[in-house]
Image 1: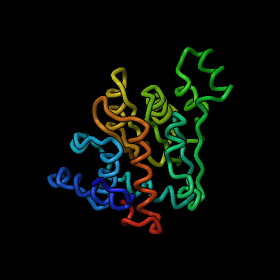
Image 2: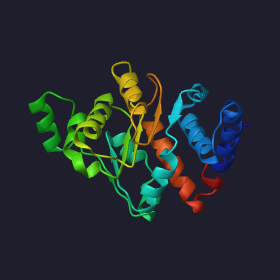
Image 3: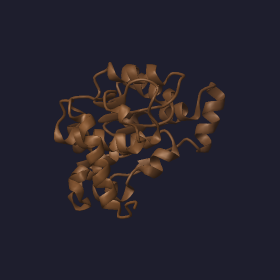
Image 4: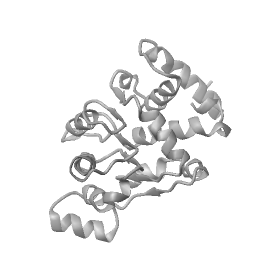
Length: 213
């Protein structure tokens, strides 16, 4: 007999994931974030490759509590984030990848649309939350903005997926000093970016249940 109650399914999923985190030194909040990222992927192989900057969780919490906005690379990330919960804190979600000005700039400069979107966001990213789940080029551009234009997001959730540039972009992210959440190697994706941010939203939103898991 399969389980049908959502909360029971989630509880059981977390019980299955827990032993795979047992050997890691994690705070309670980090454990919840790891658990949600693993749950979203269906892959316990994420446990040893997730990387969370020591200040990332608190930086994300503080940003959310002051109503920070979220800037994403693709619509899949935008659609997955809990907008209802984000709006409780005053934040909004922005994705420009399909906007006409982004399409035109990408063509004119010979770059990806997600990269052009981050370039157009520019200074709007300062002090806000960046969530990149698909495009390594978007993450490379955000890191360029940090390095060359002194733009400082509150946190960068950077988990682009793939075999061309993804591992390199995430390695660069992990080597700089802006708070970040990422995974090593080629794994990642929109659902992983969504899971990381939603985990922190649920930690803050005590009305959700399961103590934010």
